[in-house]
Amino acid sequence: MAGKKMEQTGRRGGEVGIREVTIPGTEQRVMYSRDGKREYRIFLAKPDGDPPPSGFPVIYLLDANAVFGTMVEAVRVQARRPEKTGVFPAVVVGIGYPTEMPFAPARFYDFTLPVPAAELPPGPDGAAWPELGGAEAFLAFIEEELKPEIESELPIDSGRRTLFGHSLGGLFALHVLFTRPAAFRTYIAGSPSIHWNERPLREAERQFVSRLERETLNIDLLLAAGELEKSHPSRINANARELAERLSPLAGCGLHVEFKEFEGEGHVSVLPALISRAVRFASRR
Image (cartoon, rainbow, N blue to C red; front, side):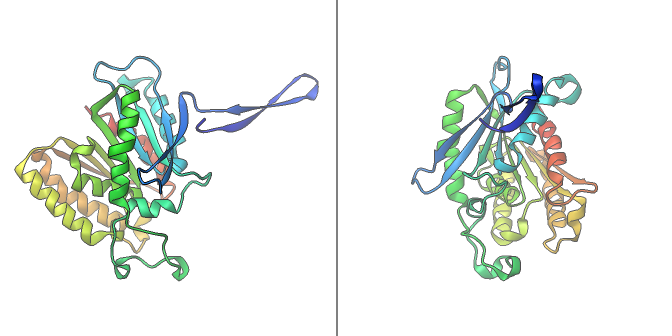
């Protein structure tokens, strides 16, 4: 079960009982890419109660090992009073890896595009980065394997799909937006690592803008970062803000863009605040 913890309970006579604690309504499963080379731990949270006539909204969440529990609880708690919070019950599908660590090296391959080594940021202590450049294969896994499996089992509103990614996951979310905009209705790109694939991403952005000038889409995009990330040489905040400024004039073409900087938060600490904001943003109708 997803989100297991151990709870110690007192018993009469000083005895101690141990039992597992789980997040209600959640489960895990293992899925493999079609070529069998990539293994994923899929976390799934199902809402209580009956779905609306069109089906439940669904949030596809990257780096699920790190943030699945936070996302599920944010939805579960806030969706109790949708008239107050604006948050409605939703299915949460977390894409993670076979590890108990919050982040797995495999994410570097899944979330990035192939680029020359000279265009990459320097590795920590001069070390080489893990294997990179698998974003298209990862997107194919989501579109051709994961979505069909989940959405054949659960009543899903295909018009209310959200993709949530942070850091390199935010970079991947932008890649999907620019190259397959109809794959999701809502995109959340937190602290996006635009500097990793800046040249190919800018080219994809230009093609996306050109497409919007020819056809109207219905897409929401939330770009966000922590205030304390301003000091990072990668310009995470500035890149995200400038992207929001370039895309905001396209509101008339069906693209709604917001940028949010979270006061007092850094690259990792921003996650709970971003998730709380994201579940409300994803519930926009």
